[in-house]
Image (cartoon, rainbow over all chains, first blue to last red; front, side, top):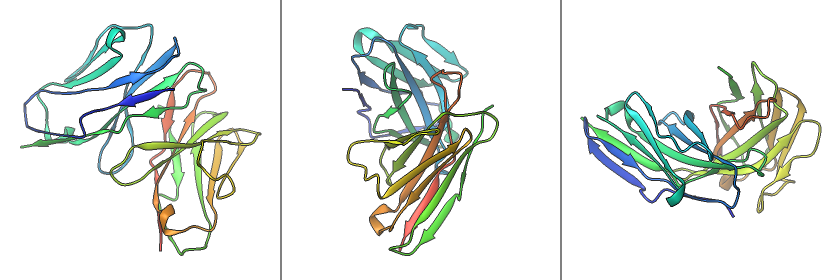
Length: 115
Length: 116
């Protein structure tokens, strides 16, 4: 069975703080993809990153960075110097190699960045 | 970038009526589209996989006779909520997977359904 767990339901930080959103996944597939999406209050999902299971390199994109560790089945997301505009719900998702592209989403983490 | 549209963006209907939601891939062809449902403060749950030219595959617990899916062309999938009830009120989001076979999925903006 495939599963994605985001243990942090809500996080509140003050602007300019760094924040890490945790994501732990379970899958028996050897080939799989991991994703992070941002969902602002408007509801539209914003794609942030996709990582395949064979690429464990960490990635940095501006203030965003991702740490993928297969040994702990984790794919954590860090926002550096958070801003109010980062306030949203963030979802981690998994797509297994044999699942035809279906995405399994975590429960989501609601991030609130206060000025 | 690839764009997926949904229509309508929001709809209010009376209990017992049916509502059709359209999902279109605007600049690419999608043999596969997915329909998700999201209740307030909850995650997205996959309802069904829509395959062009064939029957949709429904997830466990989703009533196929209530949520009719038609994927008649490579750019259009429709979800019809039949005999809607207040408990069907939700945010419905579609995604489309491009034909290149990558795991790239593009999401529509969602449709907010309210059944009164």
